[in-house]
Length: 174
Image (cartoon, rainbow, N blue to C red; front, side, top):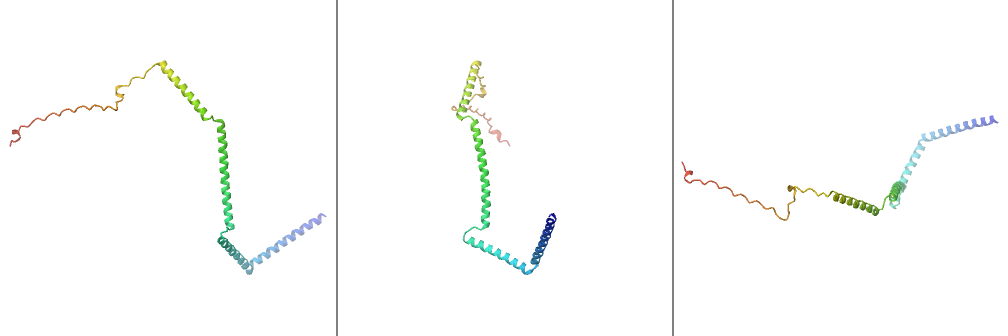
C-alpha cells in the first residue's frame, strides 16, 4: 500500500508538472500571436475609453467618481485620526485639571491665609518699631524737596559797569 501511495504521488507530480508546462507553452504561444496581442491591446484601450466616458458622464451629472470617493474616504480617515488625537489631548487636560482641583486650595482660603500672614508681619514690624523707638535720620538739606507751588525767587542781575568815556579831541589826531 505504501508503494501505491508513493507511485500515486509521483504520478501526480508528473501530471502537475506536465500540465504547468503545457499551460506555460500555451500562454507563451498566445502572447507571441500578433492577433491575440492586438485584441488584448484594443480591449485595454476600449476599457480606458469606457472609464473616461463614465467619468465624464458622472461629472456632467455632478456625481462623484470612484477616485473622488476614494480621496474623500482618505481625507475623512485623516480628519478622524486628527480628531481622535485632539480628543486624547482634551482627556489628558481634563485629568490634569481634576488632579489640580483636588490638591489646590480654593482662592478664598488662600487669600485669607495671605491676608493673615500680611497682618501678622505688619504687627511684628510695628512692634519692632515701637521697641526700637527709632525715628528715621533727618534728610540732608540738599535732598529736601522744594515747594512746587511757590516759585523760587530769581536773583537780581548785577548792574553792568559803565565803559570809560572817550575824549572827543583825542580821537582826531592825524
